[in-house]
Length: 213
Length: 213
Image (tube, rainbow over all chains, first blue to last red; front, side, top):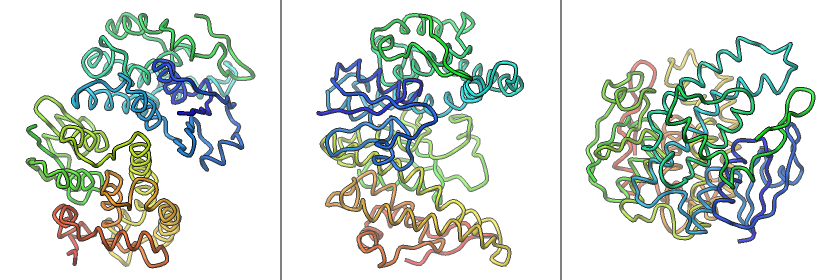
């Protein structure tokens, strides 16, 4: 493999893939792009201009879920479990993270990132927080039994750690009200792959905010 | 395996999975649901109420892409190719079928299905047809080289055959202007799995239409 990753460190799909690459110990070159700009090299590879885009010689993968399967597959990695049942559960939870979890957090993060605090639409943020709590209730049920939060770190863990670390940074954390999730997040947030992938600064209205770890 | 499939025969995601199950020769029980109704058993398994839902004992899979991977995985089937590169290309095209191809066809099919012909919103249908042609241009480039239209029938072929057969029935066919696609569709539409999966009648405003094959 000769891996080249176009990414933005504040993008949850990129962060998921970056954590996966680090878990697998796969060497790769990284090109960082910036929120709000369509990188010209990315546009040539992916007309939508979105990241991540993973390139391995003539193979261009502009979908994070497919890219994570590809690198795990190539490395013979453990991220998608062993049995067909395990793989199905991991994929279902990773899909839930990419879809429902992302949708719940979008209103909170986009609002806080786009405007100074005085201008935040508080109702929009409250709506997002209500959906985030519903997601936490669902994930609390699944933790340890639906492809993440168990003994081995999976593609679903990669996906959800990316979401939870970003959520936490933007003020939507997890509390002991969700004890299994709280334990899982506390345990995995200091994992080397997560620490190495997570940026030190994140975009906030008018600039960036520093992430304290 | 002890497979139970909840589906609607006019749903492209269900049809994709059904074609896959038939390709793999996997025995399964089918429960047919009806457009516009949320089946009570489906609601218990999947709170969104959407189909397909594939059940194998205690494993519930309410996502068609995950379900197709599961059955292929369990059967050791050929639908996702052999090498990591092949699998990535098949997954990318299947993802494109589930997303962009579906979005292009939605306006055409929903409009024709919902209203008598005299009331169709012709502008909405024309917009859909323009997007459908753009999708055909993209797929023409990919045919034979991006996980479908080659020597072996893949998960991407399952996904796209479901879309193309439905598109054709609702008046959005493929013509010799897209010669590779036209050849592929003409060849594969009479495949036993596709013939067996495709319904004889499809919903149309005020009732159903008969499908002539």
